[in-house]
Image (cartoon, rainbow, N blue to C red; front, side, top):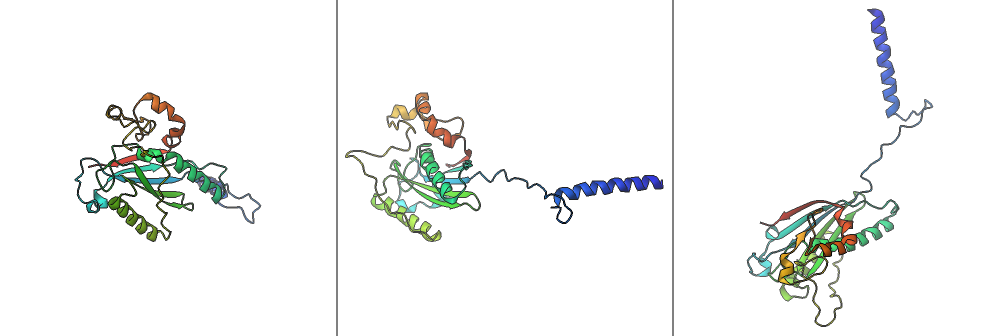
Length: 245
């Protein structure tokens, strides 16, 4: 009985020695430091996108009567992988700017969007971005409007942007209308992400990408033509949620 007890104690002592050697650095004992468990999420940037707009069924009252709670929303969670060679803040900033430039089309061509503040077709947008590399998290608000120079809608948008800038302690970005040829109009966000055809027949054929459930195309040909660009966002879409009641 005593021999059995001694043997059991020896076994437990050996197990304890192995266990402690795995979780201690070995300082003073000549042992090597325990291997650090890698953070598998360190190269993933979580991006929470909220797109604001309206639809044709919404009441066409005064633009500023629409509250934030009543706006139509598309909530998107993206989880793109940060390139392994982006090891500095500058290289990360360059990468994320190019990424947002590439995927911004997908934020808009995914529903029959109307202006956030009136019932006109949405053709222009403003993005507000907040980024923390410390937490690998980015927040983006996308406001879809008919025209940033429209008297009422443009003024409300400027007010929203000023509030956002104050909250984030930054200067509001200037409202500069991109140069356009005479008679040119920006693509309607309710149209195909590739060809932007506004013909009613084309609009009726619009279907969402099956893989991401977000971006809309009027034909297989348009989807194939946009494949190289769209795959950047398609593979990083983690969740799409609609607030469309």
